[in-house]
Amino acid sequence: DLFSAVQREFCRRPDAFNTQELTMVAWAIVKRVTPAEGVFATICKSACTRAHEFSPQGMANLAWAFASAGEPSAKELIAAFEQQLVGKGVARADAVLSTFKAQEVANLIWACATSGAHARTLFEAVARVMPPRVVDFEPQDVANTAWAYTVTEQIRPALATALAAKALDFSAEVFGQEACCQMHQFNMALQLDC
Image (cartoon, rainbow, N blue to C red; front, side):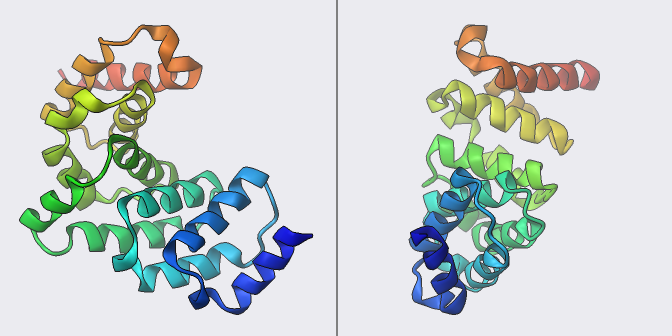
């Protein structure tokens, strides 16, 4: 089929694909639940060498795809993105992260936690930059971010306060079952920290 042909072509010439196309291939594999032998490894290798070329959306979506697929190379990919985002000093990290939309931050942090990539420097930078921007978060952004900080045991007071306050803006129904479970974990962690 056409999708298999694209995968074969991609594995033959990964550098012929731009970063958006790399992300789209990974996303399509996850959404189609298609076997992708060797494709994620090829994407990881190409993406890690070109991390500086990715947009915030591209980073978030590719990290999400790797984590959603349970791809072992997700940690390597996230480490390359972390280095790109926060490896050049606090001021630059804050400036770059301030260009991320709420969903992009939430998806990237969720991908870190889901894949077991604790990315401490990235989590610290997000916790520093995001508290005033949490007002723009949708329910899923709040839940994913709160859960990621909880399961990686990296809860930061200012961000936790902002997330908890924003969560109160929504009824439990808008969160959905999984997000409610994420928020429950977050709430339990906050109670244990007191």
